[in-house]
Image 1 (tube, helix red, strand yellow):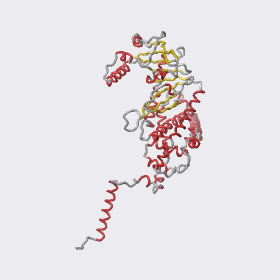
Image 2 (image 1 turned 45 degrees about the vertical axis):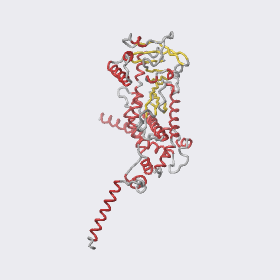
Image 3 (image 1 turned 90 degrees about the vertical axis):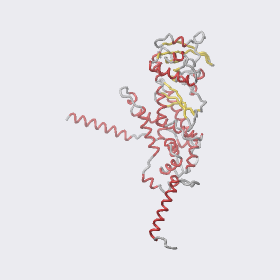
Image 4 (image 1 turned 180 degrees about the vertical axis):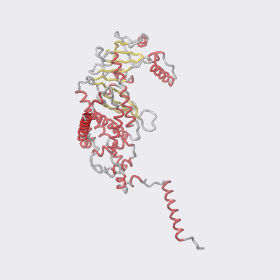
Length: 453
């Protein structure tokens, strides 16, 4: 009897918890963004006249439908009719989408500015990861666009976005440094003009380097013999070095840590392959440097000894995973258009989706913080993002029931039937021919054979 009473008490408690969850519905897209969509759409000219499309929420749904579904303009127009957004032609949809790039950029800017202000107000150490990814148009042979991202590890959210052409290289100067910030980047960011804005600022940096891409000096001003120093190391080592920049001479901590044998083998094979492509013989110094993880940092040694700095750098892999989620789930690297204005709408729309997913993840954190803090059963950000992504797609797609389709069927001819063209469609011609043959056979059977001479 006692165990039954205990079970009933736990069941009632669970039912009450579920009831409280049902009563507090999750926010819609406008509540999640906390932005006045109508006002921003008017300010940017995206929705000056509410002709056919009567609200900014409907316009945003249509934009996101286009960037997430990869449907043609006619299919997006048919979807807009089925959702009772408007009876639009494909050309009208095209014009609407072209006019939304400025609006989408403003929405992204508002979200990022709000996040930046929130991060500045917190007393928590801000670990900011940086990386970039290449995005190309269909059939491109080189780099068309480069997406630069900043990611704050806690809370896990994108805090900086910039899109450049192929000439926009990786640099730590792309986003302004902030106090109480530790910026972590790969060796693609380790050159003088990239590090200069952070040196002497209130922020800190941890950056991986190659053995010859930074002109490091010893205290007397002579060039550091990095290879000679590495030859003396059998375990992790550290020394103070100096870097001369246009704004002054700054001291850095140089940390070198031997890599595991399997990592060394891959790094040396990669170096041989790169030199083979350029028809050069790999340098022995390059093979030696490939045996070490080389880092420079401005963190104080008292609070951040070498093992902790190395651990911080290994967290940089989280931005690689974030970019992988953007590519695998949102397909942000799959451009489907050539028109520059449509490219902007397409990219900015997908980036807005990424920020919306961040907001939804933070909403989940507010409901279940123990998921994010558990060490025994840590949360899978990938599975959570995948579910939220599918939920967002369903919200955008809306109801596409068979009954709704049949109700709008007469009007859908505009989208599902091709416009007249000089060369007829072969399948349509075959259907018409077979229908004609059937009618002719039926006529001959009804009137009998022709007996006239």
